[in-house]
Length: 79
Image (cartoon, rainbow, N blue to C red):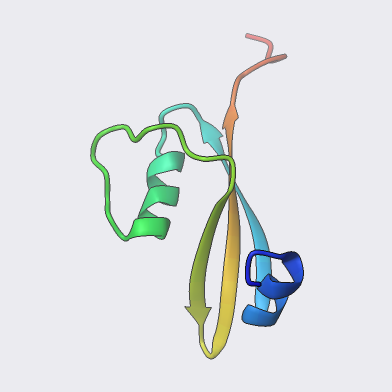
């Protein structure tokens, strides 16, 4: 089936992992939500799921983006 790694490879020309990194409350979750649903959220969205799979087409290639979100916590920064 398509839910297996081999099924994903067979269904798409390219599998890509994308990491969205940024400070808290800058719109990382909103960007991922926009890519998944096509909707723009002006309010702060609910917490993003750990893994977001977004199919896109680039030219004639079928691409599956595996999106991850990481928030900068500021741990270890000197002030």
